[in-house]
Amino acid sequence: MKNHILSALRLTLVMLVIVGIYSGIVYAGSKILPTQGNAEIIRYKGQKFYANIGQDFKSPKYFHGRPSAVDYNAAGSAGSNKGPSNEEYLETVQKRIDTLKMQNPGMANTKVPVELVTASGSGLDPDISEEGARYQVLRIAEERKIAAERIEELIKRQTEQTLFGPSKINVLKLNIALDQMN
Image (cartoon, rainbow, N blue to C red; front, side, top):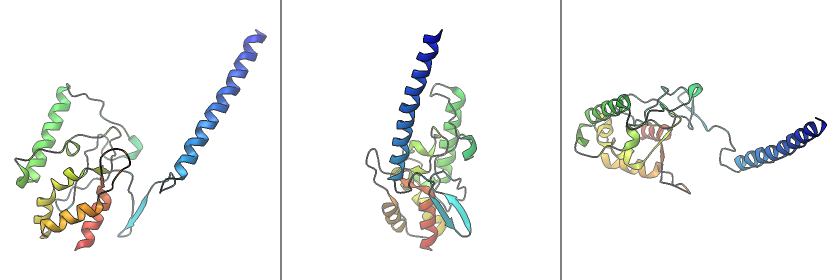
């Protein structure tokens, strides 16, 4: 019995050291990031927004981000857990495609970017692709009475290149920059 207790205590101590070292490495690694592991807070028009969390933009004069499986509630971050063979999921995606094509009639024959009709794993993805932003340009240009070329230039300026993976655009920052154009 005594041997088992000593073995359990040694294992506990070893695991505490390993987990402590790992946690320290993750913490130190976060401090070299631009936001130092903290949320990126943007203050705009007297309101506070978190750029790291997807926002719900419903107005046709704004870019829309990814749909959210949790209605953009950061406290309940989760995906839908429905796979591509789930009938309910397929119906939801088809409704989103139909709605998107209705909102963007100038793009009816264009392939719909996948991130505009599928929710992310967390349900809170704040970014879209350049393709997803370009899909919405004609609608926004018409709503705001701005030349589509100016909005395309804005998209280029707001595009962030990533070290790994495709480039991305933060929808909140893009919409704030869009407001500041006028």
